[in-house]
Length: 222
Image 1 (cartoon, rainbow, N blue to C red):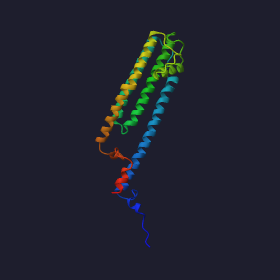
Image 2: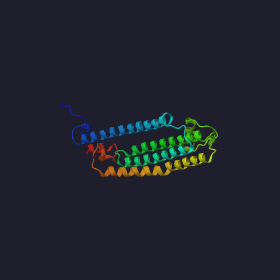
Image 3: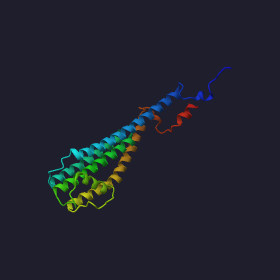
Image 4: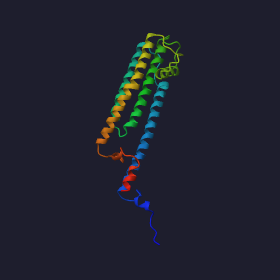
């Protein structure tokens, strides 16, 4: 008796032909997405760790007067705005705009927190009495996180007018990050997706980015 292949082998997408090519392209696209996601997580952790390390080890936060502290604080806020603007442009041109948006938001928030922690530490050292207790770098970062998360434990409080103004700026900036910045990043992601959809398929699976994983099964069975 002649042995024959099981019926399912007739539609096996691993065999040669158009179905095999589609499955191979889909598999390469999935692997590229996994690598892109892993790279995004690695870059996000690296950026956050680098900023915290710079805050503790590299930033010269001592020996400055109030005017110097405010000037450095203004430069920090400008750096946050420049970084955010650059990240928006990168998202639009990125092949993975969603992942890039997550990375951009994490980098912007991390820099935002480090800038305000530096400002609080500088203000505490240059103008004693600005807070109810002297702030170390850890104290300043801790206070920044409590303000940003709206916890407000009350163990550290600003006493000077300058300190309270800086705290109000952080509150307003935090609201902008949650509301306006998130909306801008969402718009950049949508623009990036539209831009990628309008381009010729240059990467595996780009033409099937709106399909579901079971679509190759349906195509292979035709």
